[in-house]
Length: 262
Length: 288
Image 1 (cartoon, each protein chain N blue to C red):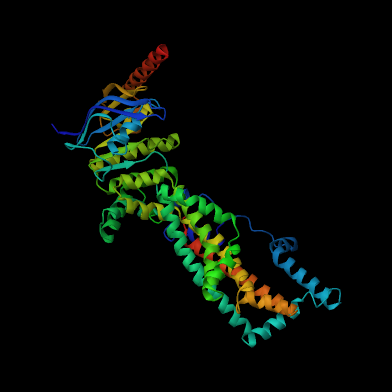
Image 2 (spheres, each protein chain N blue to C red):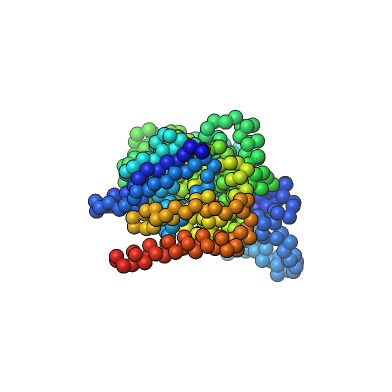
């Protein structure tokens, strides 16, 4: 058995409001991510899934519990985690290649090394012909490929993706999911992927963590035992739809409970 | 905003002649060729045509004696008088004097303005402390400080440089500061996520991210510095184009006044377009 890479033990996150009250965004979050595992966190908007990812990335302080990466508590952001952000977050003044090597530049790698590494990664995400293009010359899908390559460049121990395909059209999104699985298999990365798209989470993950809102809690952890590699046709298979329906049911049930309490 | 030249530069990347590149360049270059009718030529060159027309009417009015040569010069007079003044070196001498004052003053203003703007934008409390002074100074024509400056440093070289500096520095500070304050917080977060130190974030995000505003600050600053240098020369100087214009006017030499004004106009156009050129070469990624 591989050892736990990320360990979240009763993590809670709360914000102080201006009037002195506290808002609990995440409560009692328990999760274990193993080496090379693909974990999706799915839930309705406002359930605290992005906040939780922010805590793993180190942008967000936790207010209770323990959060360990490779046995060490997470304190602040660091190069051991590669983050792929939600919106367009490429530097508009840098070319695709220079965006990819940004992290290597900060880490002080020699120019030759980082350029060859950057080209290698652009090739991995299928954009080797676009290294001199600026982000606004690339389509949304291409931009997110560069974004993924940029996070991979620093060879992080954990990849964090925060609804990376949320802004893409449906066809591009499906294609990007397929691509991400290919990249994941090639690079043998460990991934935590946040999304509100149930089908996306089932298609990608080894394990889907379903969250509910107010306060953001885990409602269930669903193991996805679909064979890999997963072609896009898998999404039309009855087993896939069964998982999708099940997770959808969990979220709806929680929504209904919420209605009754309000 | 950008010139056609820039677009071409970016739209013809050397390696993108394959099919895929069409995805990134959805606009086709093969538009219908415009027919070269007379009307089209007129519309294309309406600017220069108007200028020539105005000059011709002006000259005609002068030649027919409709306008008084004591008060208004004529294009032909401006050219001949201007040529003579260049020949005897008087114009060049004054022009160099003005350009000297301007470039020293504006150079210092640009460096100071950008540095102060970056710092006040990055560190909010310092920026807040600066705000009242900035607001006061931006709303005031800085030329009003001229008597005070003359009192302090006299009428020499330094008084003009100081005025040029004061005229240009505030818009540069304000624009740079605004640029840094309005940085996309997402990009700052990206740099943080890659383990950037504060200084690294400053250099790799704040500086390039606020470049458009820095450049527009420089553009406003240049205009105001030009006003500053000419005005200062008119009031407290024994040299420079501003002085030349004021002096010629005092001597009722209206042709020389017009020559001086035209020189200032050309100088302004050249300096402003040089900023545009710098702007487009610095910001290749900004394709409309």
